[in-house]
Length: 249
Ligand code: MG
Ligand code: MG
Image (cartoon, rainbow, N blue to C red; front, side):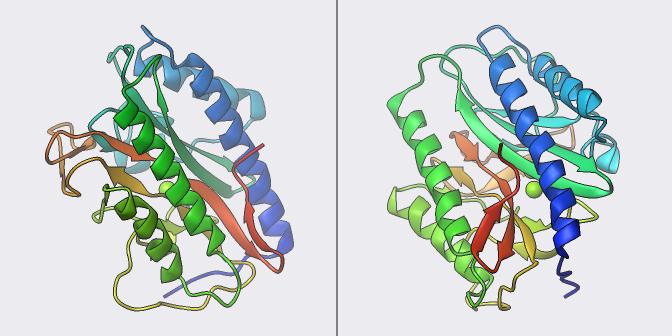
């Protein structure tokens, strides 16, 4: 497994990429109101990339046509921004990425549009809490799969299920590097975490069953049972002092 440890100067560049991603989150969150299309969110995110002189790691990734993924309701991940118009009661997952000086940031969040059902609110809260439980495990001396074990425990205790077909990942000079970071315990503890390792941790949590399928557009991943799905992600470095979240302001 080609897991790269990053130097302090590399992590400084990833911090700058992460800051751009956090600004994309702010801009898309502000744009995500009732009546806006998911293409409007993509435009808001592009404006941040342009302003910061950052490149997109999503655009043209295996042919992906946008700088964000926008995934409403039963769309788990990889939704293509387009004509879908957000309406009150929707939830929408927004995944953003940026490259600064050759280094990548990647982070996602899910939000409600206007008033949302209590069950949807709880799904968002639990999924975000599962991310933070995973991040809390990102300490030198812990094992890689402690992350997924913590994510899974939070999600399943709440009666939800974690998606298994898609995982978090190492990140650095490419968006997706080794190792993959499952959101469940795969039955073995995995390698030791050490300072300099940088991961994108990204629980995808379904209200119903964990299964997914891909729509005919070749990208949009939806829940197999049509239930809601939420997605939260940060890019995090393991440091001597514990986890450092790089994708927030
Ligand atoms: Mg992402
Ligand atoms: Mg990711």
